[in-house]
Length: 86
Image 1 (spheres, rainbow, N blue to C red):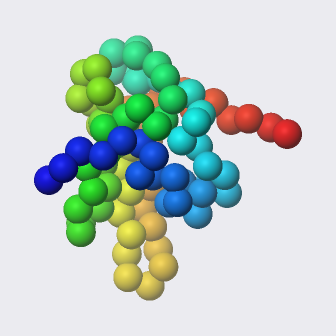
Image 2 (image 1 turned 60 degrees about the vertical axis):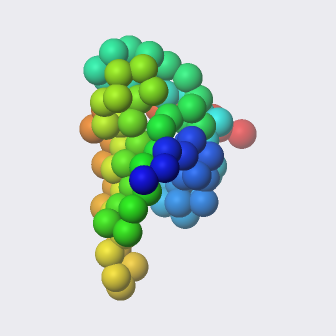
């Protein structure tokens, strides 16, 4: 399984959140490292997608899509997510 960067999440984050969060700043709950969502390590398989911290390898985000249009989205390792308002 190859490692992608957070830009691989752009389309799904836009679908789920209504905006592209890849340039938003995040902070890892485990180690406190921060930076753009685009920096995370992304592992995508047929079973789902996991985003991990590049500094400590903690799970930052999980995304699983079900047949029928349901999605399960969790951000257990993200302490803070920057939201920009126009």
